[in-house]
Structures are given as C-alpha cells and as structure tokens.
Amino acid sequence: MTQSRGFAPVLAIALLLCLCSTVSAAQGIQVALGDTVPLSGYASGSNWVYLFLTGPNLPVNGVMLNDVTKRADQGYFTKVQLDGNDHWSYKWSTANVGGRLDEGTYTIWVVNGPNDLSHLSEADYGTISVTLQKPALAVDTIQPAGSMAIATVPPGATVLVNDIRRGSTPLTLPDLAPGTYLVTFTLDGYAPFTTPVSVVTGRVSEVEATLVPLTETATVMPATPQVTATVFPKTTPAPTQRSSGFLLALALGGALLAWEIRRHG
Image (cartoon, rainbow, N blue to C red; front, side, top):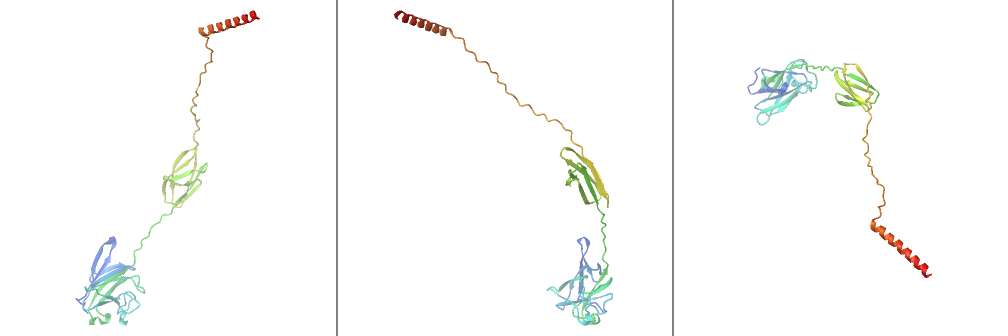
C-alpha cells in the first residue's frame, strides 16, 4: 500500500506561548486528549476529501473523526470540501468524538473518495499521525486564609487596615491572606493608635486596644476689647464781663421805675 503523491496533508496546531507549528504527516504530533487539532492539506482530482481514523481499540478499517461509533467500512467518513485552490481544512475536536478515545497513537487517513482502510488500493490518500496523551493536571495550592477579631476600649473606634477603612470596633475581618498588617484605631477625643498584627493560616488573630484619652487643655478665648468713654462733667461757663454789665443796668432800670411809680402815686 503506497501513499499517493497527489495528497500532501499538513497539520497546523497552536502550541503554548501562541507559537504555531506546521507538522508534516511523517513527523506526527502529540496532543492532549480533549484538545482541538486543526488539520489542513491539499488534494487534487476531487472536490472532496474523506477523513477517517484508525488507532487503539477502534475498528480496523477506521471510523469517522467526529463520531468514532460509526465505521468507515459501513460508509461513514468525515467529509470535507476543497476550496478553489485545492485546499481543505478541518478542526478535529478530540473532546467531541461521540465516544471514547484512549491514550495512544492514531492515524488520520485523508482519501480522495469514500474508501476505508481495506479499499485504499483503489484511491489516492495521505496520512497524519497523532498521539493522544492524558491532559496535564495543574493543581493550584490554595493557602487557607486567616482572620482578625478586633476590639477597643472604648468601642466605636474606626479601624484602618493598611490604610484602608474596614469598619468600627468591635469588628471581625475574615478571609485574610497570611501576613502582617498595620491596624490603626482612631476615635474622637482619643489618641490614634497603630499596631502590627500577624495573620496566621487558619487562625483568628485577636486584637484589643485600650485607647488613651487626649490631654484636656483649657481653651482660652481672647478677651473682648472694651471701649471706655471718658465723660467730663459739664461746667457752666463764668459770665463774661459784658454779661455782668448788662445785668447791672437792668437792675438799676428796675429800681428807677419803682421810684417813679411811688413818687407819682
């Protein structure tokens, strides 16, 4: 059984780090069970190619790629149309094959007609070798969290953890990653207080702080400035000389008037 030169199947698969590799049929590839494998190639002399799969625990003459329960010798193939450049492509999802695929090396057959493995002498074909492996398992180790139970005397103090406000005491903070935190307490009338607190995996770190009152100081208000008005006593000015002469003349006139009245009376 000779592989036809008229077929040049090519496998393009996306590798880690977004690198792309084009693997020839002779080289083959290794992928994890469940991966999607982009297949492509060129063919001539037909508008279609017919794909089937052989490998571990599969019928000898092959099965469909997308349904391993359907046999190629019963007329079932994965049929792919060529484009205007005699190119074909197909994405084979190893997770959706209608059945189970075991670990091992499989052969994908690309034929220019509906011919199973037992009738390849009547067709042109090419092959692609694919080794399916178990998926690698990555286990993330999740470190259990710790917590804080925070209280103050007196209660009601604002709590800041690493400068982020978290509430007022009493307070419980769950799901904290292990490590050291700076816890600050503030309360009106009391001095602020900061302390480091270590959080340990799976444990509750209890924190209780007694706050110190601020020293009371007398607030001295500035005295209100007082305006003092100096009142001087009002004095009657002494009569001037002119005023005294006028009064004397007035008195003499009155006396003369009285004398004249007595004389003529």
